[in-house]
Length: 607
Image (cartoon, rainbow, N blue to C red):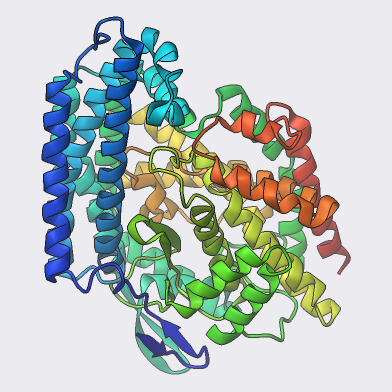
């Protein structure tokens, strides 16, 4: 299905008919029934081989242990492939139409099955930790166990951070009416929020996502009024969203404490497969770069005749980009420029456009932002965006197709081999976004157009370096304070403003910040995933570093890069980076990537 939207051309709705014909189709029902059968069979297998509790090796026979582990891994992979396909299929309806009651009911039903999956995983994690001493010898016997050595060793190591099996099972069940419910509430409230907005003498009822797109409108009055209307809208729903955030973070704090975590960041670092020192090194380099970002923000303010930017001007365009992208323009621009890197990447993008993997139209009931999700059973991805014809949105499409390319490179890997840390999850997306930005700069027809393109890049870089740091500071403080008491909506706003002042500094006007950034960012409400902010900065800087290597080495770089993406679930980040001679534990690497951004800021100031 495609929708004509003004002068943007037909904006597609994604198509998943090759997965299942519909939510109420016989094929979908059969897939749900198959999932239950696989869950039951895995339970029986685990009971038969006493996989649960602190395990003991089945005698001293390493070959027998290898066979048990290999059988479990094979069953688990098949189960996860089906489950995640069902999740993606249902999610495609929920995220584009939050009024779809059938999809929401099925999502709730699948959540219950997900609890069983997590309980099985907990039993295995506890058991594999108990047989960790026998694991090295067992892995030498080959099979699926050996092929999943990294996953198994990491799982055994992380098993120390589990509650008892009974406590973990209870936490998983209670999560449906707790942390999961709070996360869903935030998504529903935000996707259904509409705002009356007057433009050109007409009042339209805009979805909050469409209103937020006006941040980059060329008319300063439109930007200001849109910002004011957005803040007023968040005022009307602040209490349920504050309750949701308290619920999510309260659950996370409690579970981290009961699992023996040092703090809320501890689990996120392990999920990211980096250590605290590496994160602090990267954050330190980012903070050292704030003065140059503030120079950019003040230079931009000067173009508008101001000393500092009000929030509504942070994403304002400068210069003049003659080109306004229709959807067909976007397809041509992305595919042709991806081909300068590799035919495989270009072909992947071409398939995504031709086979309607992308849902591009902003509309009421659809969630904001953009994301990419894998559909494992068909070895495809699906991308959601809210397209408005701007270069920024073209970059967003390229970004999400980068995630799809990452998924493409992992085709042939099992579900457990493909578990990618948050840090490396943004590598391919950042790389593809960089390809598009470089192409736009190279094709700039005038200084004014070059300025506009630089602006688009710097708006994004400022978001990822400066604003991401503010989000990190915000989340760290609310996690610390949530250990002691619930926070009010006023508390959240006050912490958010302080975090923005600490990072943006005198580059923004302190009278006009965005106290409700916490309300609509879905990353704060992620289930079992705290601090989904710094990985974006890691991805940008790591991706820029890799792109610099590509410029040096040309097409010879491509096979190694694709091999990196294929193996992001089978090594820690430092080891993967070392393949390219990158030491992420030293500030020099991060400083080198930041200098690339600094050079663009200097060019922006020259223009």
